[in-house]
View (cartoon, one colour):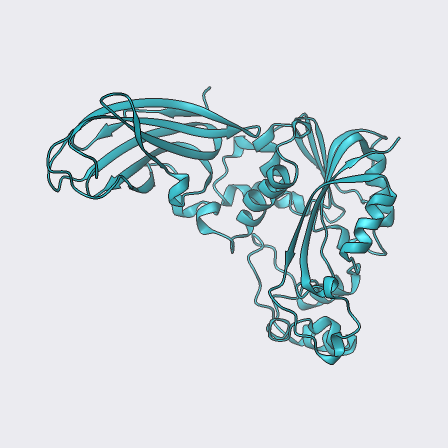
Length: 405
């Protein structure tokens, strides 16, 4: 079965004169359960076969991270062709990404003519994308709902950041992958579907992944999309239940800071089960950053930057337990204030310099590193004892090769 299929591309009018608009309709279908990074390119050639204009769905701001099975229709719209009088051919190509590789799924061409006088100045169409009958609405999909959507944060943002931005669509993603502290498993589902690895195992002692089928269904992911290579275990990062050198890739996204009692044993376990030359991708929470307290759902924490470094623990505990958080969307998972307090007290005080030193001491060779900093740090008396780097760096992302011998 094909992943994508392009259908009968058409122009509303093949002869454009005066104020006649340019209206190109591109029907297509997703025949597999899901298609990823869907895009449409439109190139205009003149009668001599010279390329004179280019437009693209993605370049117009449509980041179509994924589409479920169904029928769709894209439209390229312009008030006029904005081209000199003459004959032209519009070449349309439909694209998607499979296992990290950009793939041309279909092509079509439509001839048209521009009559004198031309209308407009250059060819710059706007784009629309709509779902057909019986297909989930575009506005109901996570990438369209945006950054506030829990499913988007994991299925789209975390999965793509991990696999492409940090791991460079490495061929190792087609092998065996372990996610340490997988939570509800949404990120693992996103990676497994995009790369079809030999195996992807998520471990987490809290079994949040048991809700994944319900979460995926509510997000319009077809039930038959969940791949056989994906599975989960209620295991601890301190005792990973696999033999040495089993995995090609190990992922840890927002989990190392939550390991009670420290994460040194977890890093040693990750090194043990990761093959020589395998890749680690880690995104640990940084305790001393403004967002490092994980209390952003409380109004008092948002109102006072670095409140967890300025206020006594008793004060924080009283405020947390007495407040009702502005709960972010967690795909139906609702936590009580007491849970937030426990999570805060369990946080490991990770810093960028210390984490780098720990990785290097274990034989990890950094490959890619990204730091996200706060705009500005206002040093109050309570913050004078903290370093510039610890306070200013809000997020750390790192990928590294395991150079153990």
